[in-house]
Amino acid sequence: MLEIRFHGRGGQGTVLAAKMLADAVLRSGRGECMAIPEFGVERRGAPVLAYARISDKPIRVRSRIYAPDAVVVLDPVFAASEGVVHGLKPGGTVIVNSEKSAEELSALRPGFRWVPVPAKAIALKHGLGSQTSPMVNTAICGAMVAGLGVADIESLEKAVREAVPVKVEQNIAAAREAYEAVKGRLHAAAH
Amino acid sequence: MKKTLMGNHAAAVAVRLARTEVVAAYPITPQTQVVEALAEMKASGEFAGRFVKVESEHSAMACLVGAAQTGVRCFTATSSQGLAYMHEMLHWAAGARLPIVMAEVNRALGAPWILWTDQTDSLAQRDTGWLQFYCSSNQEILDTTLLAFKVAEELSLPVMVNYDGFTLSHTYEPVDVPAQELVDRFLPKHDFALALDLADPKAFSALPKPQEYFRLRRRMAADMGRAHQVIASVEDEFARLFGRSYSAVEAYKADDADALLVTTGAPASTALDAVDELRKEGFKAGNLRIRQFRPFPAEALRAYARPGRNLVVVDRNFSMGQEGIFCEELKSALYPLKERPQVFGTVAGLGGGDITVELLKEIWLDAKQGRGDALQPVWMEDAR
Image (cartoon, rainbow over all chains, first blue to last red; front, side, top):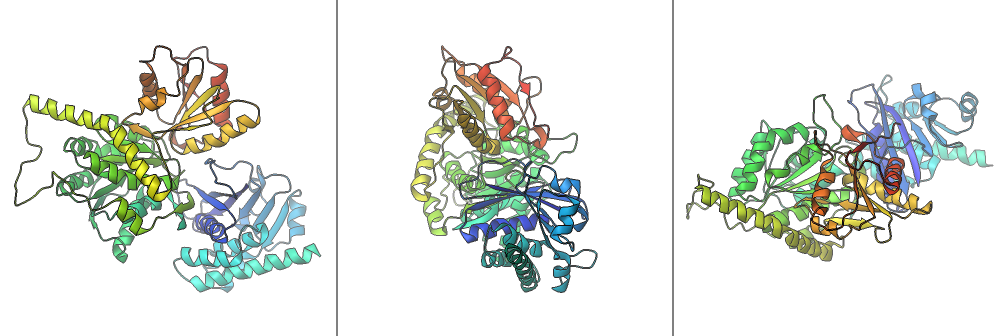
């Protein structure tokens, strides 16, 4: 079982990112995924948490996640903060919306596998959201699929098509660009 | 076909598949998406029934009391204060023998304002004459909603399908959505013997004499008693058609267990992992899940009662001045036995507090050891 925690802010589409991931895993036929939003009093800009569990067996545990295997960070402000790695297993993966390199992030907070993706720049390039409020969730999903290897990009594209209400092609393009960026970097690092 | 659905959408999809004819509902967190999804399906033409917008939950149920009397299939959904506001009409729907189905998304009651899950809202409707089921997964929400229509129509009694706010209502997971033809076979058009008919006018629910009222109540009680058998046979038919089976009490690794957790709703799903972890650590743990609350499956539960084997109930609800409500009901079910096990009450997760694998393991270990004072419930929380 792979357990993931999401950090975002109200209005960034954090819950939808978790849902799209769940749908992409199901469509990939690689098991099942439960996406669990942590609801408070929802308002734009407030910190938002969500969780996901992925397993090739039926998932029965229905609590929050306290010791995730991976963390996904939609808001760059949180990037390398203490809260983001809280409870994260040693060596756990952090998929993070950041312009910084993996080395820079590792130096700030060592002991984890940092997978940065410039999700804000990718979102803006495809006309998703504004400079102050970019819609980074589909780009983050592309990075997650590449960085965690839990689904294939075609399944994610189908999940995005089903989930996003507007700018469907732009969202798919953002997901694919983030996917390729992370895939390429991981490939280069492996050589 | 499997789709990634949140619990609230699983309920709405079941209502569409059941070809429900009238929906009257008022939105309240965390139930809102049930009503939203049905309104969207109505707008797109996917849902062919009437959608009646009302100004309150009380009116929603009043509207369905009228609609159901004409013999159409009816549905509503609510939570917490909304259900409390509907209370008076719940008695009316049951007394009038109307097969209305309701999705009730368990949410704690205020004051103070609270949004998260807790079963005290629906359990406080214990004596209204509604059947009650408690679901542990989104698949079960869809399936139980379909089952509920059939059971309600066979018994001429209303059914409440309960599930945990947020923990199930807002969580996405794969749900097998059955084909329409299959659902049509399971749920043919409802033929209501007591339907309002202009060609054959009758008076409904007019003032009876005490003797008539007594006999009507007695008949209703007998039908509630008969419900055990009706539900079991509807569940059998469902299993044959859809390949998924349910029962009033679901036991997990109970046969050789030294002590049993007794759980309901979403925590009953987490409890399966807790049992497996305890087994790995060498403990003989087991779990009983109570899926049906009204009628209460006393006989099914007695089958698991062995003297010397402690039972520990995990209640995410509380009756002030008494104890957890499932615990109280279980004790009452076991009382007629000559030799009884100890039953310990645990109150956990009120107002949405997390009921984790670790907490459930601790509760089981505490019960296995035995408590000095079996009379008082123990309040336990996962402090993280």
